[in-house]
Length: 440
Image (tube, rainbow, N blue to C red):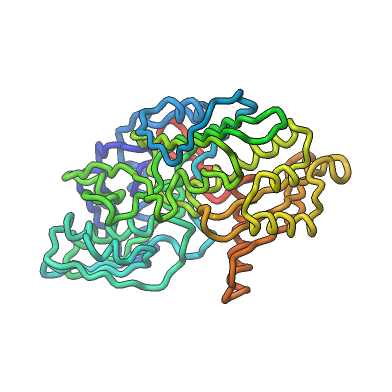
């Protein structure tokens, strides 16, 4: 059972309801019964009377841009190609809210653990099996002589959810019930409120052009928390319960994946478009009010959006067609052909096309700058609300062994991108997550 306020302290625990056991270790609180129905009822009674001491710990969601720009950070130059300064033609500033990696799945985060004679057995679904089975937080925290981790099939997710956290939760409750197998399951509110999120990000792009409107300089600044909090990457356990115990472990400082693995916040931050000068800087926030980690694509989503938005602005300022402007600045023939292909299907007139309230826009990227090329034309209707009416997608992924699998990735990514752009965001107040239901 977890409070709805980040960093809350457990002040008073009520007596256990009849037939239930309460497990407490510092601020870690769990309710145990012999059946799922009984434990649901007992947990509801405990929740009504347990007392948490909480304070405001989260920034103002309405001033997220200012917070990201001013919070303490470490800066790393990802790319630098100096040249003589030119006048600034345009500036793009975009803010991406935190996002959740949940999926519409029937299975909640769940683990089964058994602690007996100093040995711990844990069964659960893994996204990073060898991270979990190697330097096991359960071995460190439960002081177990040996830990055996069993992988079982279960629902997946688009990044780092609570599946690693629930393994430690189950281990802690099993430690308090030696010899008995313990099944621990999160609620949907736990998943949407307590799992790691993708970090909120601020991206600022400045572009310089010559007297013909052609690119001669590009500066790209990225602000946000890190994208890597998976266990096994830190000297301390990077799991939720580890920070709640009486023998508390400091919360691991979320890091960025290395550039050789595609990077994190700077993924796809280096444009494929030709420019004389280039500077890409990542400002990783060293304070982490929300626990953040990987969500599919990492920084690529907001970086591509920033780059492509800027290219549209520059084309419009130069009085040139958005497709032609991109093609002029590309030296990669496969990139050009991908854009031409989608233009043949979706129509190259990406502005002022169609009846009132309708418009078309183009987006293009090469994933991580090294993988598949993809170009998309989206037809948008802007009426009482914004709707995506149609997508045309062209992809060059080289030699494709499984066309159906490739189509699933492309179409699934497109649907999820529309959902991210139009509908999804993690919301919070000064103390906790407010978007902990499907509806919110």
